[in-house]
Length: 252
Image 1: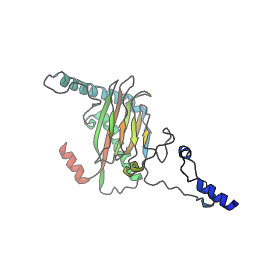
Image 2 (image 1 turned 45 degrees about the vertical axis):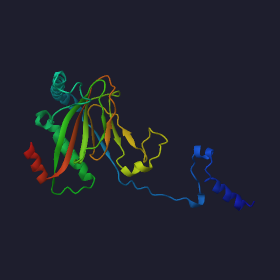
Image 3 (image 1 turned 90 degrees about the horizontal axis):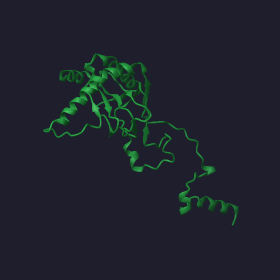
Image 4 (image 1 turned 180 degrees about the vertical axis):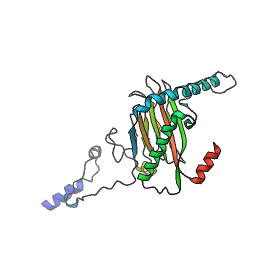
């Protein structure tokens, strides 16, 4: 057999799917056909992280009586024999916080930063105004508490500000929002590394940390198994039209 034919057979053998070769995937080095790629990161899904530690103490203090009242209201329902509720929920959820003066500053910051993010992302905000649609405090009990995967429809920017947490408490998980990717998803070589093929991203958080993200981003919270309560503020905002803002104000 000529050297030329040997080379051809060797190259063809790279594509023969024997059981042994299938178990040991390898990169094909076709030297004469190499391409030099220019990688363009299109359709990015950014997550914005910031720290505001000076708000940990005052906002925990302000949210203490609110969570206490929510817990008391749930206990009344549990104690009521005519009520179908028999246990505490997975997450204690407050009413809207912008009615309290202690949360005015954080509300203003969320509106400003959320608006800036949409501007940085290239959206045309002409004729629109930043509007908070939701702002509440949540607390998971010492044992239990979680959120299934979900998005926040009819909003543009969502996020969290963490008040009580540590390395053992629950934390948010962000999921790949591209629906088409799920049809051809492959197993990752290293689940702990984040790269182009990753399907989910775990964020270990600290008190005083902000996370902002686009509201279409699917997210969840892992089951809380920490030795203390897990508390955070959750928020949603819209780049609303003047008509939408007026309608929202009339509903309050």
